Length: 109
Length: 284
Image (cartoon, rainbow over the protein chains, first blue to last red):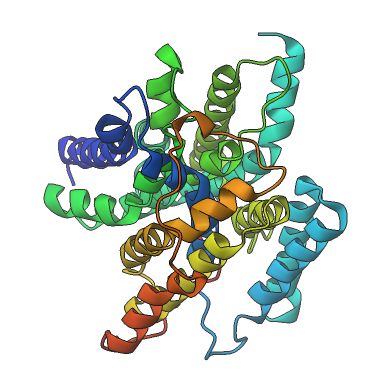
């Protein structure tokens, strides 16, 4: 692929990404008073989206094939457990990640 | 802008720093190995700034994809960003000159940090959001440049370190769970997405999930809006824009219906199990 073509592809991808990020603000953000429906979505969407993102991160898990998503399941449980226990974001993330690395590198090889 | 503020921004963004440096590093290695060295990696991280899209971009570049297919791929992979905008319209109102950058830099991870809206006392929230967004992009850029420059020299077995992003989202999910009594939106988000993943497979499930989540939350509004308002301890974030409740007759059971209906009626996709990829592979 020539450099010009690569630049064009990157520019297109950047433009579409920016469009997706700006579109809601361009369509709905101009009014002085945000419609009640949008305010409502702003309150409930974050909870639903975070659930969606967790599933999105785990989309590659294959429950029907060994190790049946066990490393992911255990590591997610570790993150949630650590967070319920200490409520320390850094501890939860670091602990869960180390747990996952140990699981896939040494236990479920 | 004092040193204390910077310190608070760094503390707030450390989880993203860890994830972004690691994932950016991975992207840098991938890009460099595909023949698109440090300059290219840098340009993508500055201008596209969307993790999973940039990983995909490397394969689009090497496979000689067309402009149209690149645009469509970006649309599919990044459509979820529409959601972030919708839920930040009130919060980013009045951000002035910082607003365009706040919107441009609204990645999954930045969204997960700013959607709570807890800013330090006495700090302009928009300045705080701006710094959080800016620092996050710096981490991402540093990671990708490092990856492109020194990636091939790394011998440490880092397999699975990208789970940091999954862990970040799980942490935010649990944190949100603890701060609200109304768990219907969170449960609906997980269930609808899982059902869509099973039906549509790992490459196509995001957009149907978004549509169904939006439909479910809209249908459930009479019930959910009331619960949001009667909830104790919830700061009246967008209180000014609220209107009195309309009919409140819908039952709580109405919310997950769209998901159930789609499960019953939609044809079973041939490959219900997503294509093999290691869990928690790559994200924004």
